[in-house]
Image (tube, rainbow, N blue to C red):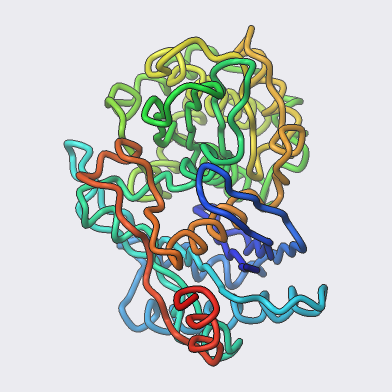
Length: 388
């Protein structure tokens, strides 16, 4: 089957689309990237999304319009992918845009909301669309994240030893993969804390720029080690996995409070970025030390943070002696990793197979994820795949 995965993450900086050729069934699943496209959101759309993610600035009418309006952007991305190749997609798997992930004080996820109306995507493209993957896992008592761990387990295990597969989007998440030959049940995954969310917020407030290109500003600053130690005392890091977090914790108000602390410490913009970038690296290393089931031999980095050489240098420093490599070096295109992951989750859901491993998210059972929105190709696809 040919499946288009669509992913817009916590950073809300753009949309990734990946057309994948997928065959077989776990554990012998074959995944090949056929074509990919990344669309950067213009500043006005990004600001609209970020307003929708904050209770102080979100309104029901704006959320309703964004649900449909952003779906048009998702459908346009599929149309662009179709121009890159003559292969017609069978399915679309849309993660949508998380606007709220409701985490109780004890760490339980009580509800989650991903917008981007699947009916609009199906209507515009004529392709059956799967969406709303996280809700079913939350309904089964799980955290609803990180769902990419299932795909990590199918594609990134190694014979060299335990791997930490780390995604660096707005929020960081890790999958601890046992080596080949060990049972899947040994896998563990959770959100490690902030990745780019605080760095990007500081850049917007302090410089007016959207992100720290190549980590250049952070590289020019001086790390405040005392402030870094204070940041690592956040109670989220003490919470035992499975656990998840997002903008409901790392809010704009929280980030602004950190900038006020930095001003009180007399830090320059470069010093702030140096310390917040080190915070991302140090926090994931802290979580490995606390919660990895075994010593980590390799760390595989994907997501936007993998393109920040300053952050990558700091990660290598903090996780030593583990070897650090990118998803590309491990055989999975880091630009589209999460879009590829949701293509696989859509494929698995269409074949009525669970998209999580038991124990991965804390759910009572491993559930089939996602909602199906039929489109023009639904009957043909059903006959080809379900009625053989």
